[in-house]
Amino acid sequence: MSSDLTISEVLSDPLIGLMLKADGLDRDAFADLLGAAARDQLQQKLSQLREQRATHFYARLSDWQATSQHRSHC
Image (cartoon, rainbow, N blue to C red; front, side, top):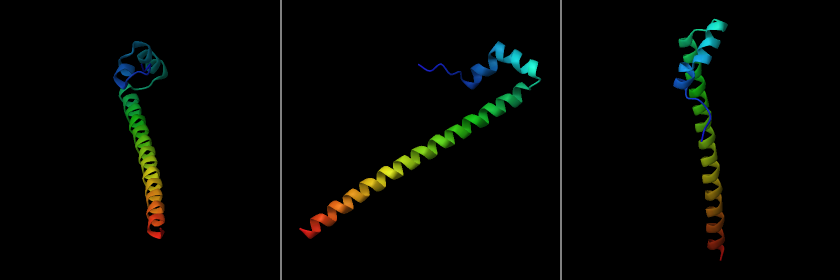
């Protein structure tokens, strides 16, 4: 189970609200910051997934080509 708060939970948390007020930060600006960070993190994870899939695909393609060439020489 995840112990991370959602953005909605963070924004509705009274302690975080007090921290924002004490630091003079605007709740809407903080929400925008959290949203941007979440989008950046998602893009990084998608990029990593694409890279992993491409690496796996080309490794399998290389194996297939090596097997195919070996069979054609037999």
